[in-house]
Amino acid sequence: MRPFLSLCVLLAAACDAAALPSGPLSGGLALPPAGVARPASPFPPDFIDLVAHAGWIFQATVTELHAATEPAPPPWADPQNQWDLEKMVVVRIDQVAVAPLQDELVLGSQDTIILRAPPSFGVGFAGYFLVSAFEVGRSWVFTEQGRLPANAVPWDSFAHKVNEVRRYLFDRALYDRMVGADRVIVGTVQQVARLPGGVSDNQPEWWQATVGVDGTLRGPRPTASPYYPVRYEGSGNPCCIGMPKLHVSDHAILLLYPDTVTGLSGDAFLIIDPLDLQRTQDLVRLEALLGAPPEPPPL
Image 1 (tube, helix red, strand yellow):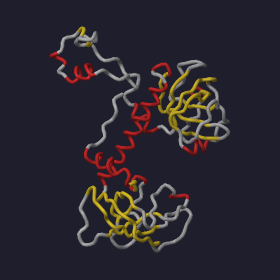
Image 2 (tube, rainbow, N blue to C red):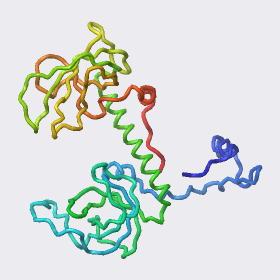
Image 3 (cartoon, one colour):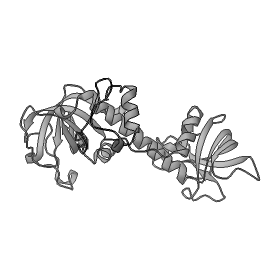
Image 4 (cartoon, one colour):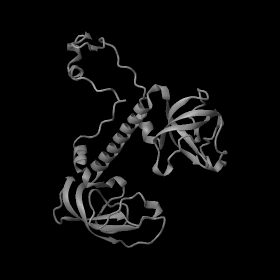
C-alpha cells in the first residue's frame, strides 16, 4: 500500500489539475509536471480476471525446466493435451496468498506448473503464479492462468492487492445475487419439514421451511401472510454440501428466488446458492452494498 498522504496532498488531488502549477508547493512538496503520466502499474489489465479464475496464488522459485514432479497422465485423463514438458517447470513454493482450505500448500514443497507457453526464464526465476489444478498425486500439477515476476512488486503489496480484488469479486457476486433475487428479507425459521422424494447420496433432498418475515431489504413486502415457504437442500449429501441449510430458530438474511428447480408442486421460494444465506450481523454492509454497487479496485 502507498504510505499515508499528508493533508496538503489530499487537498491538491481534489483540485482541478489545470488550476495548479507544477513545481514546488508550500512545505517542499511538488506536483508532477503537466502531461507526465503516472508510473505504469505492475499489475496486468486483466489481473481481476486472473484472480477470479485462479484457485491458488503463490510465490515460487523455479528449480527445474522442462520437468515434472509427477508421471505423465494417461491420454484419457488429459483430453486437452495440456501435458507438454516443453511448457512445464518445477517450482518451490515460497509464500502463499490464496489456497483452498482443504488443499493448502506446504511451504518449501516441490510442485509442477504447466505454463501457457515455453518458459522464457531460467532456473532461479522467482514469480507470483496464479494457477488452477491439473492433477494431484504426491505433489501438485497446476496449469498457469497468469504470473508476475516477483521483483515487479513487493510480496506484501502483491498479497494485499490479491485480497482487495477477492473482496471486490465477492461483493460483486453478492450484489448481483441480491439484485437478481425476487426479494431479500430478514427472517426467522419457524418450522422445517422434509418434502416427498427419493433418497440418494448423489441427489438433493429437498426440505421446506416456514420463514417469518422480520424485514425486507429488497423486493415487495408480504401482504397476504407474514410467512414464506422456502425450500432448500437439507441432507448434507456429498453432492450438495455447499448448499445453504435452514434450522428452526435460525435468524438470517435470505436471498429468495422462485422455485424453478425442485419440480415440486406449489408456489415457494428457494435458496440454493451459498450466497443466498447471509448473517444478520452483516445487515448494514448488505444495505450499503445494495445502495452502491461495488467498484473494481484500481490496479
